Image (cartoon, rainbow, N blue to C red; front, side):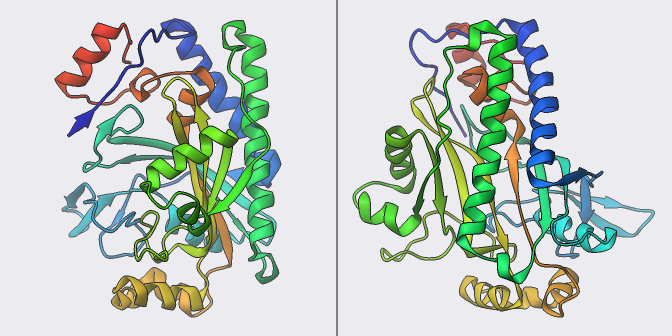
Amino acid sequence: MSSVTIPANYKSLLGLYDTQKAIGLIKTIFQEKLCLALHLKRVTAPLFVLHGSGLNDDLNGVERPVAFDVPCLAEQAEIVHSLAKWKRYALYKYGFRPGQGLVTDMNAVRRDEDLDNLHSIYVDQWDWERVITARQRTIPFLQDTVRDIVDAVCATSDELRWKFPALKKIHLTREVTFITTQELEDRYPDLTPKERENAFAKEHGTICILQIGGKLKSGKPHDGRAPDYDDWTLNCDILFWHKPLNCALELSSMGIRVDADALRRQLAEAGCPQRAELPFHKMLLDGTLPLTMGGGIGQSRLCMLLLGKAHVGEVQVSLWDEDTVEACRTAGVELL
């Protein structure tokens, strides 16, 4: 299913060639600034993992991974949804210490994604993870990390606007306004979660929504989260107000990861305690895996934000239905 809306009078600030050039610059500049801010080292990551390993990200628990058989191994493999769990295992395997971390390019296929201006079946993001101590499993430490990421985004925007004068009209809010999902529900009780995000981001520019996954007073969660990577009391989403689409653009989902207690609690709440028997989960519960925090930062989303684009297809190559292609063609939007 697809839903696309091109704003009236929308015109890309950059032509096709400059857009491609700017995408390359964004990916180079931002990764460098992110690594410096969070003390990360780049590593190589898998495109697929074995079925049953527990390493694939289950997202909201309903998305189907793209799977295929590997005859020479007599095994089934799955293309990753994200690398949330693999990264934690990699930190253990490579012997990273507290204060050290990794970043990698993650490419995924999400076959069940509904297509619209911001969503594609192809996902590209920077997946990062770093080792922390038990004393750092706090909201203030999470907030400081969010500010570091937003600073890297804004600094990348500054460099880009200097190289491409046509982008000077794009202004990002550097100051981050934090709010919990419960505070957001209390503030806008008659709005849907997405409408709450839009209303709050329009007011504040750059926002961070904390504590996603658990049920709110209404009995419903703000959004779904797999129970076995983020601690639902110590996670967040980073969103920027995106003027071309007049909406909040989610750039990053991140958080402090579950420890053994949080894992048991969230598996029970989600009704899937049997996952505790999977290899990854056993390593977490017996203390083999380090305490970590991490997240994903959308590469195409960042390019949309910094280039003022109205459709994700302007900054990545994917598959689109005929209605989307025709709507973009009519509006003069060039899909890659």
